[in-house]
Amino acid sequence: VQLQASGGGLVQAEGSLRVSCAASGRTFWRYSMGWFRQAPGKERDYVASINRSGDSTYYADSVKGRFTISRDNAKNMVYLQMNSLQPEETAIYYCAAAPMAQPTGRMGDYYYWGQGTQVTVSS
Image (tube, rainbow, N blue to C red; front, side, top):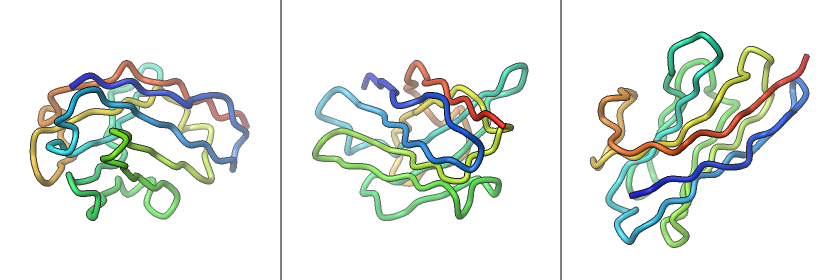
């Protein structure tokens, strides 16, 4: 599966942004999906994930209550709605696919990665 992230941009602190990830192929439904982010000079961190069917979602503690991950298997899309963004959340946001029914927060479980989309939060 090939992944293409989009929707990044510049937003003010406390603002909202939705990033999207388009997947190619007819097997999208077989993959749990995740979002990760990497700030300049830092390691890539787990943000959120969703299972194959979309009825179970998981979040890093730092984004719980502010971010929402969702997917549309009919459209081969996964989304990350981000609210109350903070400057420290400026990063490249990556979507990734894991060939498992339930997702994890481990990067090594994700076989396929998109190219990332830049999110910049100004103070």
